[in-house]
Length: 212
View (cartoon, rainbow, N blue to C red):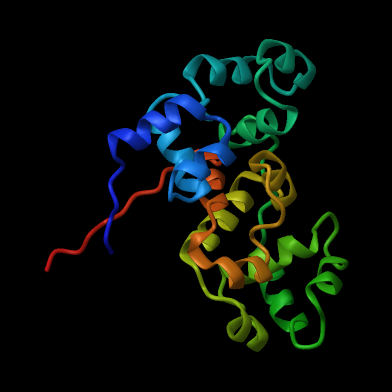
């Protein structure tokens, strides 16, 4: 894969016009995601990274969300709640038991995910779908329709681990349902929302090259 390096004149465009992405696009042959990442690396875009002082405020005052909103005015209710889950301050997640998994395997033959969820109090259709993918309980239609992307599995598994719903993640990232099958089939790994989701969940992306 050929990597096109950013040039000094492109950086000057960002420094002059960012955060107006539309104007930047008029001057640059770059995607919106590339423009945002470059602006962040140059220090001219607001960082989504949490600082230790902010994390400590959450540890000290969660679950008093109203107080935390006052103490962290640049953070939204959704981002604070998600960060609390990442830090382990939120309620512990409900763990699936082995008997639950066996029951779901039996129900899969003639029940949809929504029908299965209705038999488990407090569980959603999305929770059932995520659990099935995590444990490789795939239907024939799953294998045929949707690419099996590791980054998608990792994001869904992380949400399950810390007790965060995908709808909560969508709100924090500020994007519509980018983990649905139709979105995955359309964009594959090219969806920039994946990077924002990993960042919001407290993770980092990296590339590991194989030595030949």
